[in-house]
Image (cartoon, rainbow, N blue to C red):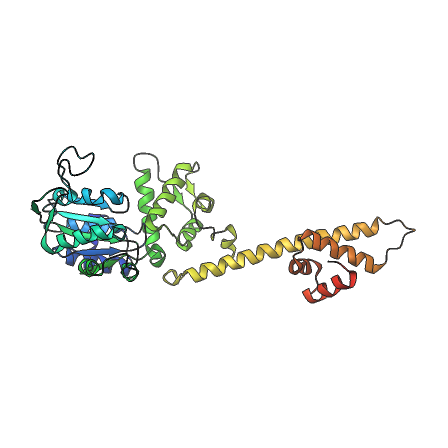
Length: 367
């Protein structure tokens, strides 16, 4: 089977070389019974690859049982995995099979494996090595034929170093490791995923909306901390709220969780070498935007302050002459009060250096 055919069969979207390499490895390891560890940030699609491994293996006609180790309370995880005998603990009114027995002959996908308690890790290691375990409260050994695929969004080596994960289990699991890169490291796949989500959500509901070029650039340049899961949610929500049939920049900005994206981003130069896009570039853009906003705010404040000073001078009685140092002192007091004694900002408003402002504050006895 070709890589493209495999991707289409199991719904793996992406033309980037990172995804193609992962698919190639997946196709190779699927036919064996070797344990596979899938790593990657939340939302990158770890379960999709687990399904692909099982679905293209010799166990495909048996169960793929998925277990989120982080979603099951520590006190009952062992019972869920290995089962229990009637009366083995309070509330156990009947014998119950665990996930290992349910997955017998098939595949057990242990998601968020790093959340598994150390005591349960010991028993898991035994099953991996002997394919045997005992239900809680039982004295009989149960044999199973189960392939293990584990996944985590944590650095397991770091967990091992901090004594939160067993070293022997880690090396037993990582016989083959698939590291799925975050979406920001394969931006070339974003538009393909976007098209798929638009098509799937609009299917049998409405005519698929059009998406503007500016909106596509926004999606490509956004950092996607929630990865594919976040992209899918953003696309579906934007369609649900849309009334024009066109998805533009304004359709997406309110839905993005990171506030790095700004309307003014469109007025800044953008490098179109998408493969080289990085967090550093986005941070620079954000800094430029914030500086521009601050300068505009300062200019408006300074203009208003100067206007107030001029009006004050004009409104003075023709018979009254106000000394220049008094006008200057009032201007400094206004700036200091307005900025709540932020001397740096006050100096910027007044168009003088901080050193000059400090000297004048001392001269006028302003504390």
